[in-house]
Image 1 (cartoon, rainbow, N blue to C red):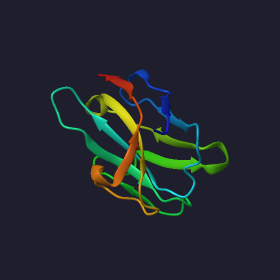
Image 2: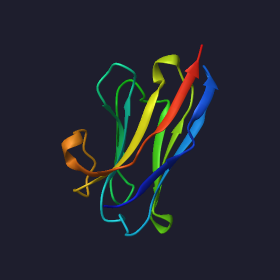
Image 3: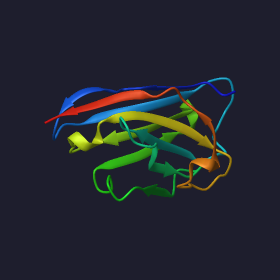
Image 4: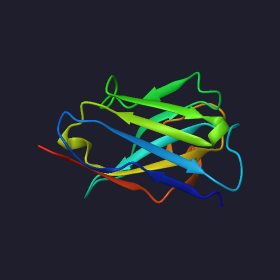
Length: 124
């Protein structure tokens, strides 16, 4: 297992911003794409964003496009999710994951390692 630890979640008002971080320890994941997913209460986990191993290609869910930005720092074994213009519907537990591929992927099945999640709550 690759320990992945998410941080940066919390409570924010609508229109505000948060920056999530996901740090891996125990081994490097610089050769693999990374992704962020989220699960709202009563809903299935869904794709949010993904980034290639080199950080030069990223994918976003339509619901977050233009508001969220995924980035990575391979020297720190860390991936980030900058979330701006947050909406109440962004409230969820956010999970980071390590892919088995170098290219980003929308499918959860492409991800091998998962973090424990961090709660993001956006109040109206």
